[in-house]
Image (cartoon, rainbow, N blue to C red; front, side, top):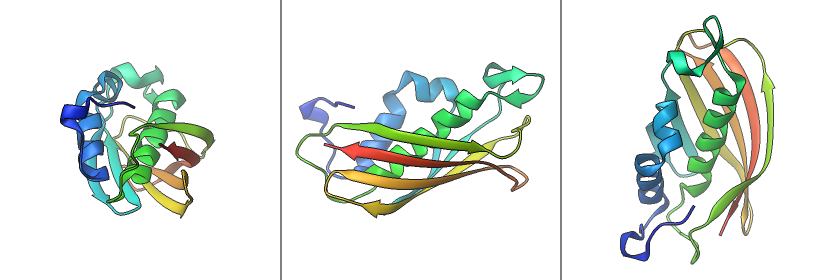
Length: 143
């Protein structure tokens, strides 16, 4: 991710708000930030027909993208931004536990360890009934 210097954010929260507002893919998925606090982010993905794989089942790629984006938000939810505002996912592991069927999904991402440049995040995805549908482990590199 790279933002122009004239719009350089001053905190991780500001960076995430900017990113979520300008990313065409995030808009396509309908992702919205529910809450952001140090080392934690909650993102919602409403159900929509373009995200379906068959019937009313949300495609695993959409769920994976929700997990990845929530982990990125948690990784950046720090008051100290690196000199270079760049980041990338370097590891992503997902376990699908139940079909996500025609319901809004909520991803709760937490940083479990923050290193010099790597953040290790645990993400749980639940449907609007509170059923856990997926778990993700994400390694995200800052800077």
